[in-house]
Structures are given as C-alpha cells and as structure tokens.
Image (cartoon, rainbow, N blue to C red; front, side, top):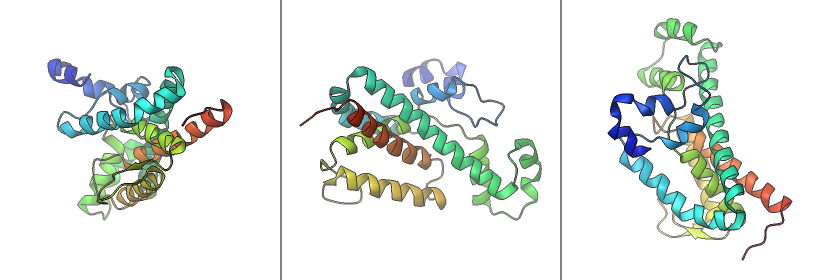
Length: 215
C-alpha cells in the first residue's frame, strides 16, 4: 500500500484512505479501517518504525493468541486508537468554540484572539486526516505488556533497558504531555495512548477468558 501511494500517485490514495474527522465532509466509513494501511510519503520513518514495532512485538503475540485473535486485537486497537484521537480533537474544537459545527468554526476562527500555534492546533484537529498503523501497533505493544510485563526493552532517552510495563507508562505519560502542550505537531498522540490502553485491556480479556498459557 505504501508503494502504491507512489506508483499510483495520480489517484491520491492517501487522501482517499486516510481518516478524516467524522464531522468533515470528506469522511467516509471505509476510512475507519483503511487509514491503518497508508503512511506519510513525506516521513519515511513513519512506516519504518511502525513495521519495526510490528516485527518486534507482533510475532510473539500472534504465537500466543493465534491468527484470529491477533487480527481482532490489531483492528480493534486501531479503531479504538482513532476514536481516542477524534474525541481529543473534538474536545479542542468545543473548548474554543462551544460548537461542533465546522462551518461556524471556520467562520469565526480568525476573529478570536489566538496565537498561530493555537490556530494551527485547531485547524489540525478539524482538517488533518489520520493515517498509519501506529494505533494498531500500539495495541500490540499494550497486549505484549500484559503478557510479558517484565520483558525489558529500550525506550528513549533511557540508555538502559526497562520492563515493558514501566516503559508504556512512561510513553503514555509523555504522549499525554505532548498532546496537551502540542509539543510535537502533526503526531496523533492520543491515538498512541488509545492503542496501548485498548491493547492492554483486550489482551487482559483474552488472557482471562481463554486462559491462555505461556512461558
């Protein structure tokens, strides 16, 4: 799919498959799933990091759950991740305007006393589509933390490995701060948070309901 966005660039695949805000006229129901299969053409590391994380955590989780439960985990995590981000974006819009009507917002946005960063945050919340498998992959990481909480991994900026359960707590906290203060514009921080949290609880559900055993 990533290759197709270059080979068939005239069709603007990323615009068709990316997930727009449900209040945006460009929103289509298929985008709820298809946004997980397109990645930014401008940021090559977007797909590299996602595929690396999928390789690191996905194989072990698939071995434990089996292919069917793995697919359920992957797609549900991606959907919940997108939902978290949409709710956050909607909250930003309502906080400033007390309305969810995009037409009204676009009419009055220039008359508010907002700095450029605030305006960009609002425009991004309204019109920037989501793309990438980050939310779904984050769900795999969350599930991995449920099954292997003491497995050690590296997470920047720490120069030493730490248990994955502690690592995701640090990551979630950092993502929350980044989202609130808009420290990394263009990154769907709440999608990462939503993916990890949903993946952890889906993993908990599978582990408890099906009494999954592992070393």
